[in-house]
Length: 156
Image (tube, rainbow, N blue to C red; front, side, top):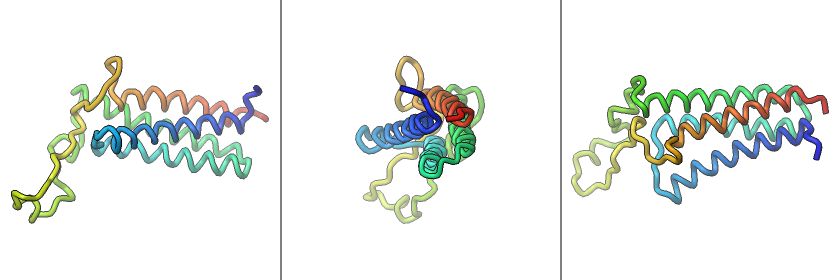
């Protein structure tokens, strides 16, 4: 199988779709609610998928550079998230302070209301081989960025 620009684009696009699908599976099947940084890491993957569809339908290989940028953006957010999880630096105020944004005052004062605890960005909800979901996103996204660059540079 020849790795054409289109095949590389498809592979990178499907990689982002798989990571995004995994995040939704952890949330809706596994019951792990995402923190604010987790949510931010999802958006560049969605953008990469849209870019991949555009590249595959139009043949505009140069847009693959934007796919690489999207993958690097989610890797950067993930890297920041890993640093927050490890205590290397402070997270965002809404991320580590137990934000109650989006919860009405009435619900906060109503003892019968079912108000979930805010999800903290500095708490690791799941890890494999000592690497958190944010860490795995960094690793996978850097690989996807490399695939996007290869797709942009490929002549065929």
